[in-house]
Length: 512
Image 1 (cartoon, rainbow, N blue to C red):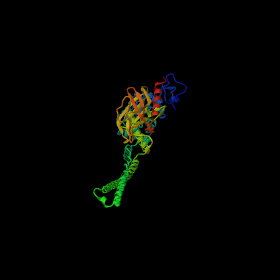
Image 2 (image 1 turned 30 degrees about the vertical axis):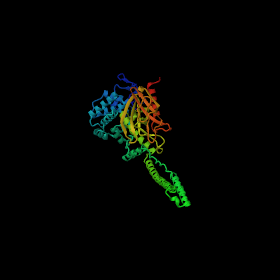
Image 3 (image 1 turned 180 degrees about the vertical axis):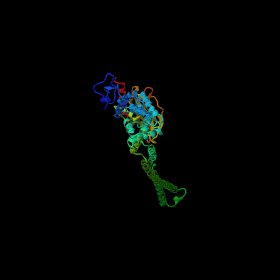
Image 4 (image 1 turned 90 degrees about the vertical axis):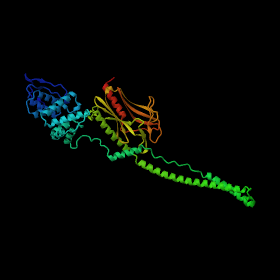
């Protein structure tokens, strides 16, 4: 880079000149060597500061602006405002306002306030002040908006200044920064926010998920058949008896018709038995035919209901897509509630996504269902979503419960922030759920889940636990049953979160 030292006579400083050696850390480990400051003009400092600013040499730029202000000559209010705006921009050092200590933030705010006071029409000062305020508003969860003044300033700012701001700092949560980004890069570089489901898809999702958590149609049960033999035996017996009576009459003639003769009575018994047997046989045959007909109709209805039920079930792909959408919405909510932006999430020098742990919410409200049409594992009616945001000096934790049927987040939510060295323990353990659903938890046992279309099963739950002084986060990550089936959320990363947090704890506490 070009420095004022390059323009100085190489014979060294004269007796009246001061030798300045800047040993402070600056960008690219460069120092200002042999800067002869005794007889420099203020404009030379300003020129050097602007050259450093153009090359993103923030440390040198700040040093030159400080030297200029110590010798600032009288100038117009607009120029004074412009120089203070440039100095404030240099003090940002290519980082968003919230990334600086309070002392630096106060210095930047004072410079921008003075620039706006000196020149109320300065678009650069107004834009930087708007970005400054919007970033801190987002960090401290204060309500902010894209003011008309900031909107006019961003529209009136020169393209050179807009490009300078957008390429130097990234404040994607600032509406003013987004407006500049749109000007510099048509279409913008801000990631597309998570789109909400359309009304039609939301209605379809709720309908299909409710169908999934509705018991499957029950197969009809065939009623017991009536045995025609119960009528056949009396019928056969009656026939034999009648045959005996007729044979007797044929053999012995009229005397057998007297009242004292047993033949008429034998004939009457035969008629009765034959009638009873015939009635029972016909009744059994009719009832069997009728019951068969009703059963066939019930089976047809069952097949139709089953076909309709399965048609209304969601697919495995739909469930995964809906859950991912819901979790992405919750992650955005977590970042907002914690006042954290993606640029603050670093791991080994790289920006990392928040760590997300998703698992069935606690019983008894939560039900589990499994259907061969939507995969092999259990699906929960409610999920606990635990979001871990790992910034440089702190860990942000957010927990809430998601209704997987409607996609709505339940009102209860919990946010906390911890320093890594304050974390007592982080672990994953497995517990057996022994009590019936709805039973009260004891010290030794916990209630199990209710299963749709299934009786109670032997169940174990795998749980992720984060313990800090006075607080505890526990999330069920997986539920398994004695038939070797388990709940599954493909994008839940409990093991990854466990390993990442342990590494950060070890790095913050140092070797034992």
